[in-house]
Length: 142
Image 1 (cartoon, rainbow, N blue to C red):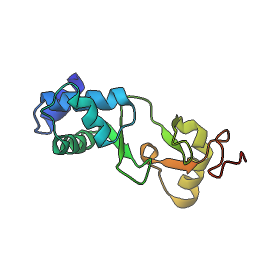
Image 2: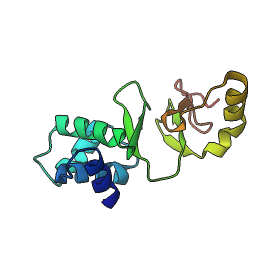
Image 3: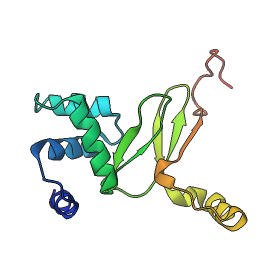
């Protein structure tokens, strides 16, 4: 939490108990929507409301302490930046989310850099598909 306090003060924000709770919830949950963060912090501090969670997540992202990605067509999903950089595989069938090391995509990233002068924002990347061991939506195992 020292990093949180330092970054907040350096940007003109105060360290509040709500901000500490919200960052801790994101770190403990791994990947969480604002509603999931709200449910987690409400279990320990009922005074936190949805708008506080949304505003705090925006501030924490601005400070580089959390990132978001879209793992569904619903709300963004947040994760801490304290862990290693990763991108996401999302199964459309079972909804499992896997964090993948960037080295797995190194050839693709290099090709995008070389051929398109493009740097990928890996933490925001989500690739959708289906786990090979998941039954297909129709019930077949393809």
